Length: 313
Image 1 (cartoon, rainbow, N blue to C red):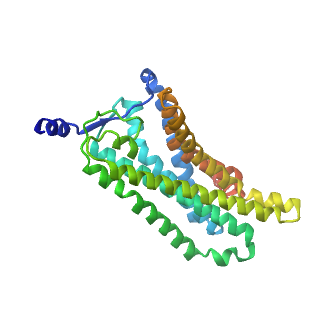
Image 2 (image 1 turned 135 degrees about the vertical axis):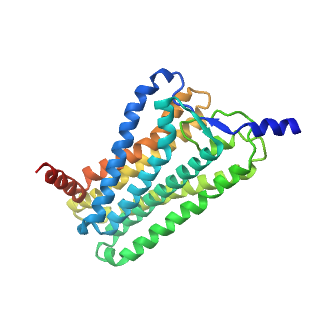
Image 3 (image 1 turned 180 degrees about the vertical axis):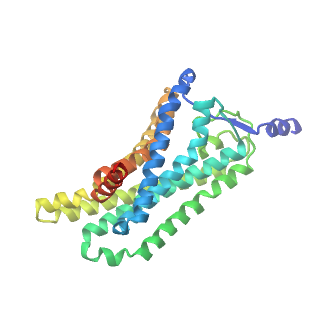
């Protein structure tokens, strides 16, 4: 028993992986990875600054958009250190404490983004169902309260992850499956009883499915409301207000669904596909959300172009 404890105590470092079989290409892969992080940071920061400085954007829809941009920004910074260390410096080692901390931030801001998408679906439903009462239902105070409640929900529900992981002993190897730390990935390396982690992880997965179900239900109600509008032009106008949010939902949930399918039906397939999907899950939403909202939201697009014209003159 003492020998086992000595072996377990020696494991103080995990090792992340880049893209297996392409280690010689990591320095080249780091170039688009860095560009994605830079563009995502600039895009989300621009949206936050615009919404803060432009009085005409002080409306519920844009407050919720700023929450989405904030969660995207934090999600990018949560995964940035390890991914760049692997691709730029070939340094995959990470201490257990740092790995657990990264896992907490990634899961917290992922949960926060999911919560914001739920709130935004409710916002679009109210805007289409009761446009005349929209401003009275979603006041600035109410928007702040909703945002804080969902942010606290994300924090409180994810907090048990690092607390329970820290109690486990690790002796089943040091190699993790991705370029960043995730709860399930760390948990599988534990040699002590991890039933609590398994049960609680399943509970969080159900909550994520519940968020997605609420979004789907919101769109069913939105479509039902839109189909009740007589004018075809009004149909298109109403649906156009949902395009940006619908794209954000697809960008966020498609990698999650794809990764679940790969884990379920292609367990023995190439790990490269699984790793690429997992990297896309953290890289693409923070990159694409600002682009989608700038392209599809006239008020955001006009103000971004206006700022660019001012800089040129």
